[in-house]
Image (cartoon, rainbow, N blue to C red; front, side, top):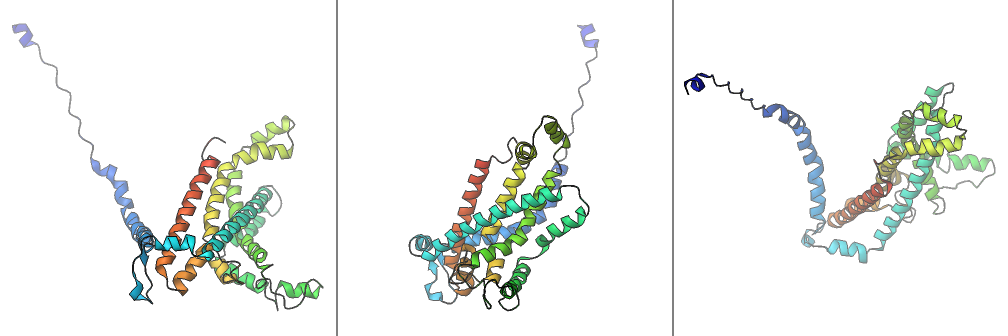
Length: 310
């Protein structure tokens, strides 16, 4: 017993100090000001739109203001044919624009990715239209389509068409004219993103394919396109959302005309709120557009398997 008592007890292990919580909270503290600003400038307006979509709110007719429930949504789907016309045109505009922009953007990216004299200047010229604002783009193309000094005047001088023709006031030509104007600005967006992804493709893959006797077309189909899958999916999704919400170019170029031929749903919403002052109904249309975009984006990402194996 005495010997057991004499044996020294092993020293107790030192207690670990609790790590300070401050370093872990520091990143959240640093982003807190930006997060609060986003809540103020993004979250609050979005919630306000949802709120006013359930209201009758027209500042010029205050006696009619009040809770409307889902009456605005019922009116949009059952009693407003212009809503369906603008929604159908919006879908047509997005499909045509995004499809053509992707096609030409991919072609331009493949061209400027090659090695040739003056490649830097060529890339600058290809990408420069993307730096131009939508309103300025519209102003440029309004001048180009001017019946007195624009393209149609020079075509008439060559015996093509007639003098005084305005492509923006003719229902048969206004859509192609607007498409070309937006293509000029939208194609560089795809070219930039696709070219950036092309830079990361290993040359060893192409060299191995050449050794195996693969043609240029097979190399493009089995190497280039699979590698560009995520870039194409992301760029088409972003551009589709932007084209759906396109207001500045069409408003400045055509004003939604002639006879409402180029009125998209966002442009109809803008006219309903700004011109007609019917903010309640415009908020309901905005909510419908938000749900449509959210649903289509989720379905598109799921079907394309974005982020999956290439």
